[in-house]
Length: 488
Image (cartoon, rainbow, N blue to C red; front, side, top):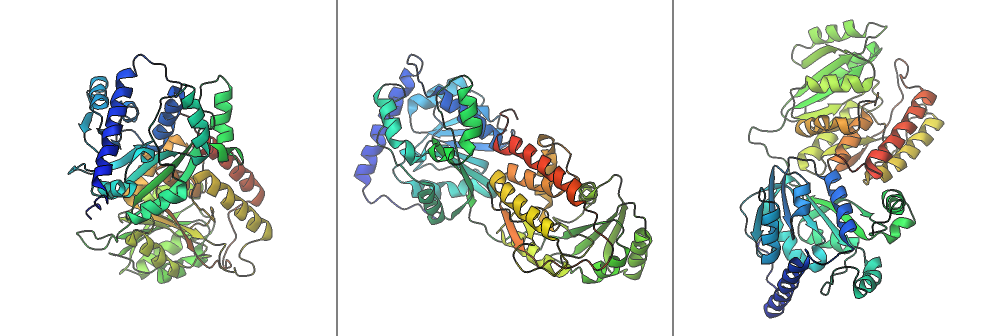
């Protein structure tokens, strides 16, 4: 799509010339003037380092002195800025990166990137929609667009601070709300994934800065007064169209003491996409689950069924073992108790194939359940943890413990590669995947399912012991995601 031409090119040209002159002057004075906004920019770097893994292909629009781009340790780093003085400074300070002198309204690059960054740029643009449309060719379906913009609540305080000479002067700004930006992204065929605010106290003050910015800035009502809003977005999804045909699917079924459900699992699990591989991971059962699966394999030679013996304990271990042996491009989890019907799996596949979501999470709390499907205390706990993790992950997660989930194998491999950030302590596997998906800024889609009563066997979940463990995991996640450490 060709970006729209400005309705007043003369005014746009004058706007651009004034800003180039302004930022050239800022660049020339940076080595002699004290800037009290330095701690604010250091805090921005911490947030971006949390959001962007090292080794990515990153382009920063409005890259200034290049310090933010360099801090992200990109495999390929490109900065674009229209100030000749800023570009010259960035090239001197970071010769291993590429800096291009260009106006982001008119840039032409025949390359694609994993991450597009616009830090404190949107406030200073003539035509935000045109720039968002201009960056679409830079994006793959997996690219993440990350921007931060000043909060409108700070319009007057920042004016006072700059009037006192405590921060760099700026020209007239766009004071856009998150809703304004969401609308502009929509007009440019992009969609927000999540948004939140950061930085309650932009000045360096021992002890106080850490308390305000790491903790209180994330809590209501203090976050209403944060200085900057962050938005993570992607280009509007298009259906997956692989060259080799529809993606193959692997359905992993952790099975411990589930012999009575095995025949139904085999008969009711549908063929999906380019074909369904069914992997049972048998968890050292005390009944004849293993032998029953072996018999099911013999009885269904036309089905692609594999049987693995689980090497460790817990559903999370079984899921990881099954995924490690999966051949499909799409990975799904199906609980062997059949409380979520296998007939629902095509809906999960369609969300991934359509691009509407990159991680599909089953939700049992939308439709009415069968009478004995979930006890009252479990229901209350699930609702609590859904609300807690929605806040933690900054995406809507209505049900954290539904066992049915789906994602692409390549995305799972990224989650697994970054697993050390959270550690390996989740016996269920649900949180390991949800934490990893949120850390990688994946689009999480909730998929309502009808939750059924178990017809064979007993649950492997201990309400009180596992409930306490869930609380500990929620607290740990708060430290690593919400009140994150700045180190990678």
